[in-house]
Length: 195
Image (cartoon, rainbow, N blue to C red; front, side, top):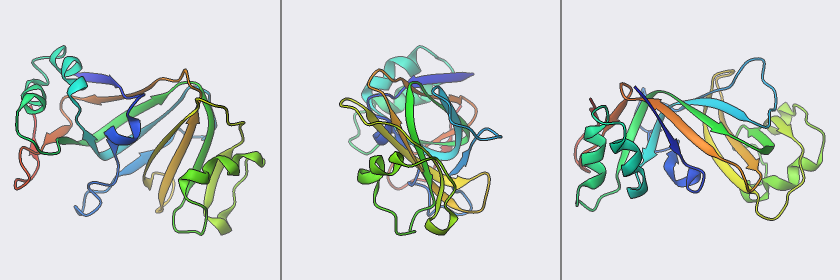
């Protein structure tokens, strides 16, 4: 069974794409639709990512019982540790009202993501010498949102960062299967397959 969570207000906290980078052979992977093009209602897939749990998610998981009973128990537990699950299958990310997009290979001398908005004044183009794979121009307005994630790209062997700028009335969701996640029940234990 699939579950869809609204992560608009906490995307950059909830989607943890780098927590498992040290767990070989697991690595986060980003899948884009082919042929790749910019769309206002943008979707892509992530695999091998962490999903940081928040108490607000409890209702969504409880509504999908019994497929996520272990997650409900996990979120509800009084233990004060960082709670996250590993999604080892593909999770689909959907973002509405997308205005700008930059897909970049890191460590290429480009500015950090706080300055990503200034890159979009140019025409969209491939700049391999600077590590920029794709960009779509836009105008930044008050209330716009920046969503950031990353992973090894499905179109090359490179790690990429994905910067998405959306209008204030955007909605960001993540959808994944009840059969493709694992729970970490304590700081000392490895991840255990849920369900």
